[in-house]
Length: 274
Image 1 (cartoon, rainbow, N blue to C red):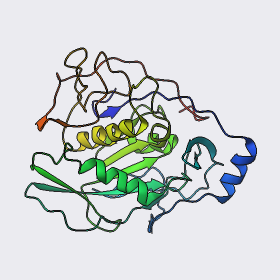
Image 2: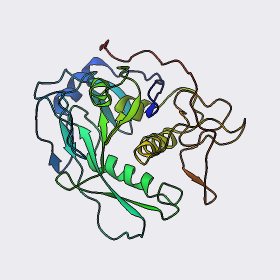
Image 3: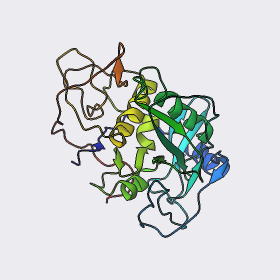
Image 4: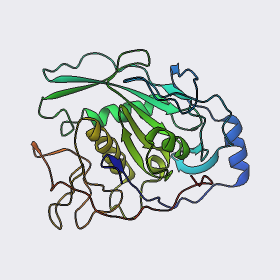
């Protein structure tokens, strides 16, 4: 297991009827102000830039989750094409190192608002107990055509494998160079037995993978009953700790012993086999 890769298990979600599936596949679309440009599939991304994209049509999406009133749908293998969120409104300042990041959602993911997803990412990264808590760094969302230190992608399981270039499990999230990749399956389903809400798990996903981009390695549970460090692979198991999505607790950077557990990977989701 690569030291900068997060593993996760799926939570079972009851699918919607076929009639809803077909109607959703026809009518759903991604929202967002900027659309990515196609390029050759599998080519490496430029520094800080978007990954190369494929122009082939994606498979018909399948209903995978019901979030609020709208189902979120995606295929097992997306087309590696992206819709980018706009830059956040100016106004926040700081004295620490500035990290600029873009937010992109794969265009085969439907029923999920790109601006809303980007806003949730930004709220997580600028939380008072987030990565900017000690003033040593700033995190600012920029637009698609602006210089960035990394891009955070919400990707289908198959595209996750293309971007991560690690064990092609189609299940976990990862960080690979300037790519911070969140698997949409985990975003809409979470993991079983996590012991906290989906909203808490999503904050963990963002902070853990961005933490890798900021130079953090994996950590272990510091003691039974204590909060898990955000850099623990909480999606594979808590190992006696309790869920925690935050880098800082009570104003202090919260850490555990360096290292990772040899947890088994869950089975692949969807029809892709690697």
